[in-house]
Length: 131
Image (tube, rainbow, N blue to C red; front, top):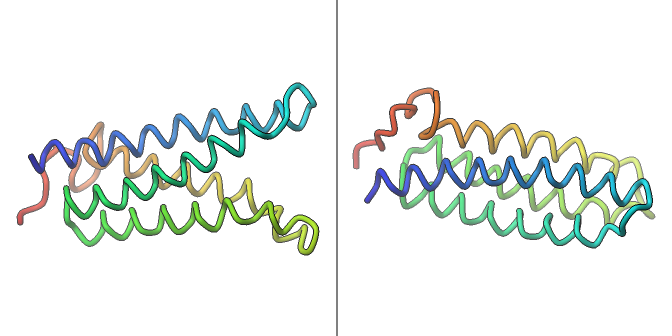
């Protein structure tokens, strides 16, 4: 069961990476006037919810301090990241960090994805940490 939860933890990390790439495309559609930003916003809120799932999977599956910490930081970064566009009128220089944090979210999600699926570091073999 724990091995499946570890695999799910990493798999959902890869899902966030895929959705993050989609987000750049959706933002481009909004910027260049082909569509509104509604789809970008909706997918962003979905990613935020999924990051909470990653955190919960880290607690249930790998149970290592590193995995739980990465899951928490991913959810916290995403929470901050989705709040930044709301600052565009009052602090546009701060709102401009929205795409920068998106890159950090993608990088951390990819690292989580590599933990138990692919050529990961300490947990790359797919073996969960001892209970």
